[in-house]
Amino acid sequence: MGFYAEQVVPRIVNVACAMGEAGELRRRVCQGLAGEVVEIGFGSGLNIPYYPAAVTRVDAVEPSDVGWKLAGKRLAATPVTVQRAGLDGQSLPFADDGYDSALSTWTLCTIPDAAAALRELRRVLKPGGTLHFVEHGLAPDESVRRWQWRLDPLQQRLFAGCHLTRPIVDMLTTAGFTVTELDVFYEKGAPKTLAADSLGTAVSP
Image 1 (tube, rainbow, N blue to C red):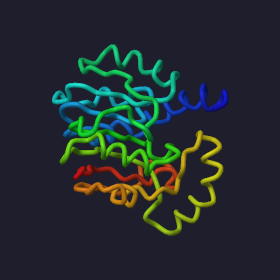
Image 2 (tube, one colour):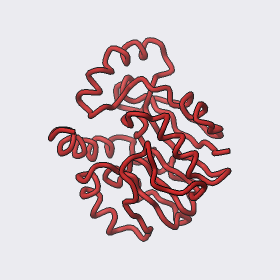
Image 3 (cartoon, rainbow, N blue to C red):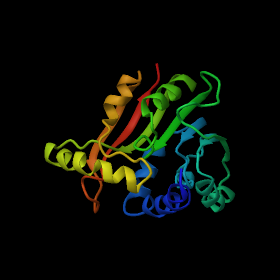
Image 4 (tube, one colour):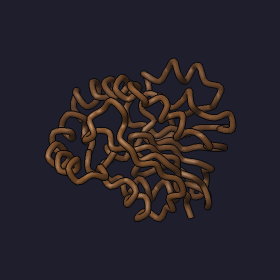
């Protein structure tokens, strides 16, 4: 990773992912989290204010040192125990069946092998554990998809590997999750190519 990806992109994401209706979407996706939680793509801790009281611990997986530093004030303000426990969502350093819940917010777009990350989440979740997710990906409308495919190479260069064209729900089911709640929509005030979101929960077998 070069200077731009390491130093600049985390700061852009810290600002961009707090704009518009992102806060409300974070509140929605965090509802129902409980017990011990693994969060992949923790970033700068933008989900911290929305952790429910039922959450007892969060093990954060975040490769960016800059992102973790930007989370400092949020970490200091939360009563929830949060520790940086891993660097790579594709290879989680945790035992099988250890977590009650998992959280992923606008993360699967960027992980190089997102399928591997989902298999890892399934492995570390307890049977019946829930993955809470909000992700942008391939749009439901063909006209938008065509633009996503055109813009995807540029998006990856500008945002350190972020994809516009990943089929989020298909990826979850292929990894063995059962999607139990799902809302597919375009974020208000954002270009449809960038903001075709899927928000919901999926259960590990």
